[in-house]
Image 1 (cartoon, rainbow, N blue to C red):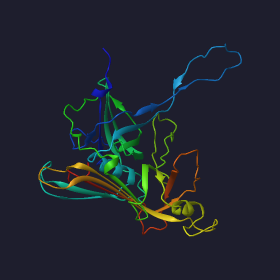
Image 2 (cartoon, helix red, strand yellow; image 1 turned 45 degrees about the horizontal axis):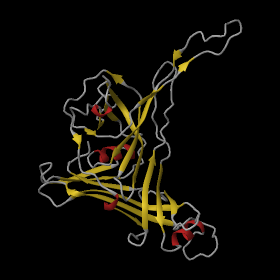
Image 3 (cartoon, rainbow, N blue to C red; image 1 turned 90 degrees about the vertical axis):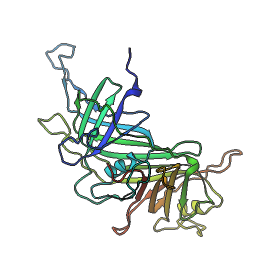
Image 4 (cartoon, helix red, strand yellow; image 1 turned 45 degrees about the vertical axis):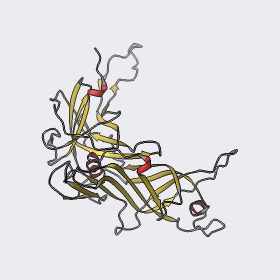
Length: 346
């Protein structure tokens, strides 16, 4: 008999104490259904170069230093998203408010995450991962290095999370009855992208975002086999869209620098605010009219210059990239808001 992937599971919990595993199964973490991916060992054999006086065969090899990294692809669900966004955005980035008392009935939680400038690095995470019943691992002091999302009109909102960990321990006891995020899914027909305050006049054919903390995953020290540092560097945050235009405004802003310009201008690039909102068709609880909702508000972006690319009888569509920027500390890079059925971020 083989090992079937679908019986595996992964759970995550924001860690309370550094260097101490905070079990997602017993300490109210959240387990997520995922489509593919796992946390992998990045390790190589170290073998010596050929030596004069030796023979033509490799005399032996030893195991080198190891790091643990992987991407988890999943449908975007509304209980695990705040935890991942908090891990992505830094200490002190998250706040929660709630009304009601009973999950699934009248409890409605609103979670706001704004990327922080903390010098403490990223929030540490504890992770349980079971691979098809073949083995179960645990990780602590892990971080969320990156997160990407995408959606098309005839598809579900998707999320891919990039995780890094300095250690792995095998053979732990798998959580038998985990609390799994089974919140409803959102789709492209319930997702609205607003560019510069305009939603209805612009046809957005697809949307995606990329947020990367650029954590170094190869910092090793003599005498130790694992990673010793997971320090984030400058953040990268951008959104990409395929747009069917109704006028030349966005192209002129991207290439010329202003909508009214008729030649290329020097100086600062044009800016646009972007708001992305996705929601479900199902309510948060049986006793509420509130639906699950996820909102991304980016105050300032620059449009990367792009070509028209006409071809045959194709209708003109633009592949556009919006680079999120932060001119000063009074403006957040982005504000994420999640409305779900739990009171606090796990």
